Image (cartoon, rainbow, N blue to C red; front, side, top):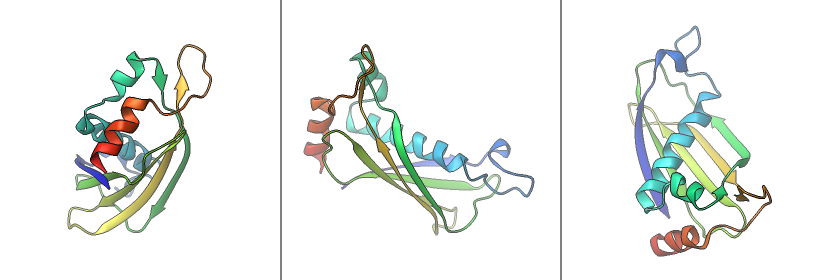
Amino acid sequence: MITHEVQIRVRYKDTDKMGVVYHSNYIVFYEVARTELFRAMGLPYSELERRGVISPIIEVESRYLAPAYYDELITVRAMISEVPMARLNVTYEVLGEDGKLINTGKTVLGFVNSNTMHPCRVPEELAEKIREQL
């Protein structure tokens, strides 16, 4: 399994009136972790885009186990456990400052040729990077 962690300080704008992270912000936290995971694998999103491939999210799941609060330093872990064919599954764990699991999630990314806007297979270079690191 390929795993990468990032730490994020919860900002005031990420919370509701009670100082609790608003539910949709977890999806943003997933994006931060996923982007850094790709960078750590040696193939940042920006490089995929330069090569004419974009990767929209086609499915997202998020399970809320406990709240995160304003000014808390959370850890977001992104994980890839299989070589993709046409879709890439990325799973997530969000840990509170105390190390306890507070959220789990999953995104499914598709791949699209940015010139034609038609679906395409996963770029071979990305599949190879994942194969090398699994």
